[in-house]
Length: 494
Image 1 (spheres, rainbow, N blue to C red):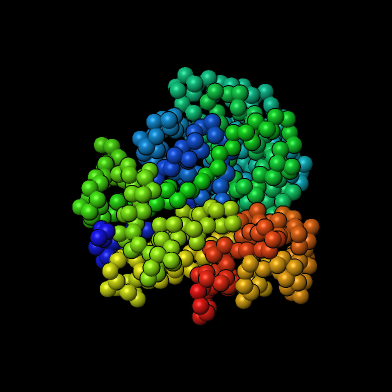
Image 2: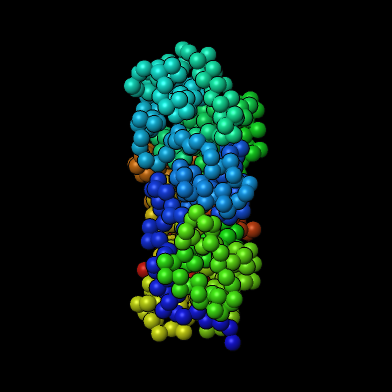
């Protein structure tokens, strides 16, 4: 008989450590819950200047973590290849939270571009202001961004001399200076302006490459890196060749889960793992008291991960094996059309499953009931819809009219609904979507919108041309699929 972790204990641990709100909103993550996937190690290297990821993949997480000195030390402990990160000097060039003393906001950026300042010059001023701490010899005495940009434009030699001297000093000290950029979707009201700004930012990153110790680190969404729009400058290929994508294979999702569960304050989950499986947890190091690292099998071995996870969930997603296995079922049903699973969605689904099991099946043999796991996916789908509404509010306008339809479905039927509801014409008039960026290919009509939804991983083009929609989006928008997780509000069969 397979091992079984005490149900009440496991549920209590899940509810105690998995976050209710998985978005940090610019705050530093709690050190004991930080998991560093090997695929992310390269992204944190100072020489990785372009870091790409989907919503929830960890861009803002690492943007915030790099600003925390203790977390940088912890990162260095986890990976010997990141020793340079620990001693790096960190500056912020742009982020989600408004900080007009450190960088211009969207309206200010628009004004600077309207005044015909080149985006490259604007970001160069931001970088110089950060690295020099606003030194008047570098950015002038003006208190507003327009004055600073004008000064930098008029005094290029002062900027060059400053960067040269700073690089020499940092190289002597053996330290890097990193200027971090995140949340660039907040920098512009439309795609042409966004592309101009990102192009200018990448030019600045390229400008710093010849220096030994000066680097930008740009956290960008994949849809912001349209090479046709942002790579039309000399040697742009050098920036794209070094881009790093934040990926989350199933193994890393579960390693992250065990990082959370193993660092519950009472230590009871660690004891259960050692009791049933013989795996011991290691302390991070002497400096980071109270932070434990999962045993190596739970970091690297999918077979060991599956065994432990099934001790929490039971072996099947129903009464028998025909319904699937929880270890693969959970991330599979949370994946987008590109096969990417957001760690936020993964954690949110499991926390919701624990709460639902407590409410509905408190005496179940395992910590998480399979029906509660399905409701956890419904909950995560609702969160994903909220995230989409924040970043791409026009998605609601395209998917809400499809409620009640069953996928896979012919795209002609979708287009017909959009025409009946005048969705495309409303988007073109700007009456939907608020102040956020519109669909990138709106002017191409239905085919362009299909492409935008496919790029976001919401639509999946099947071999026969029909459209499928992954559960993580389908459920929240009320679409059905035979044999799939029920859409929200539905009482139909799965």
